[in-house]
Length: 90
Image (cartoon, rainbow, N blue to C red; front, side, top):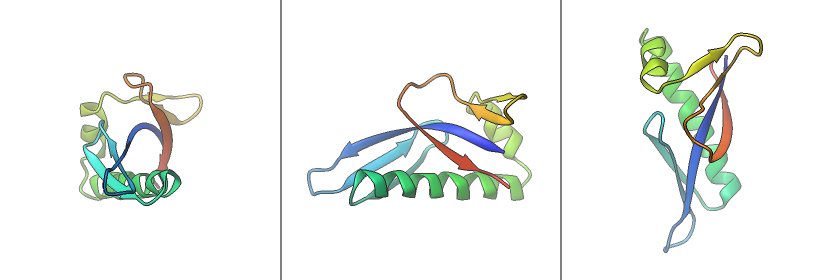
């Protein structure tokens, strides 16, 4: 399953970048924007994999307002129009 989610990235005064996924309340950071993007994708994937292992993935997705798109087997978030990134849950 592929999930499209928003990533809000902010340059930090001390250097580097912080990044948050508002749909899931997951945050990360990186020294560059690309590193921050890679790190938030990994953090979201770990979060969703943990939710799946606990049997609460459907509940988490519903709370985030995520709708499954049957044809593409993707999940797309329509509420945010920021940098979209993709996470995979096996």
